[in-house]
Length: 240
Ligand code: F6R
Image 1 (cartoon, rainbow, N blue to C red):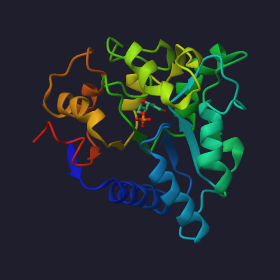
Image 2 (cartoon, helix red, strand yellow; image 1 turned 90 degrees about the vertical axis):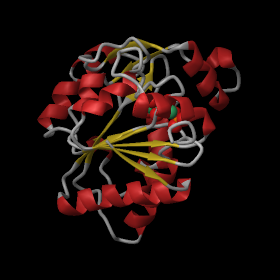
Image 3 (tube, helix red, strand yellow; image 1 turned 120 degrees about the vertical axis):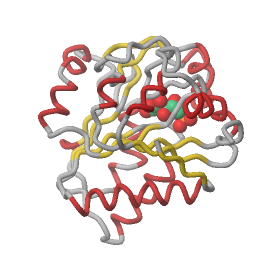
Image 4 (cartoon, rainbow, N blue to C red; image 1 turned 180 degrees about the vertical axis):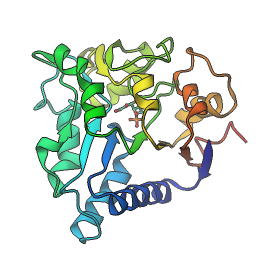
């Protein structure tokens, strides 16, 4: 695993350049995308590069990591809404090429075919991840089996508390989600993980210096052949 320590704006710029290089090399790339605060700077850089004509998303396909169960894609806190507003609406991407797990309706049959859909598209070329303060990646909380594919998951209490900042009240935070599994994530050809701020310092320490164990879901990344961890000084502060 490679580690890059820089300020947040530079991390976002560097990761965006990884995505741009990937799409320039393979215009029909398959991208794995995350929501949350961590990738916002990356997405802003991608929108800028697309507007400037440096990169086109017209043949790109995307697959998102997760979605809350119970939230429709028009709900402002749903991950489909987040992706549209923060990225897809501003790119020359075809909406039908963007895949976000469903949280309502027949969401079960949709998630059960998700890994197959990804494989049919050729597999994920480049996956971006954030990390939870408890070491989760996507919504794979501590205790998730390493061989998990896309599945339904219960959010950990600490994740509900962390994510409540985006809701009016903690009672509105969904407690369940659909999420790509740890094996689904490991199938990506290349992975970049971004973490900033002191709230992530313990999770990054456990990732870089801890043991590989299902109690620490992100530790599966240790075995990935092409995974880079992008952190700022604060997130790296317990790892030196
Ligand atoms: C979101 C996701 C989550 C977040 C993590 C960190 O799609 O998969 O694992 O990456 O909860 O969230 P932020 O970036 O908001 O700190």
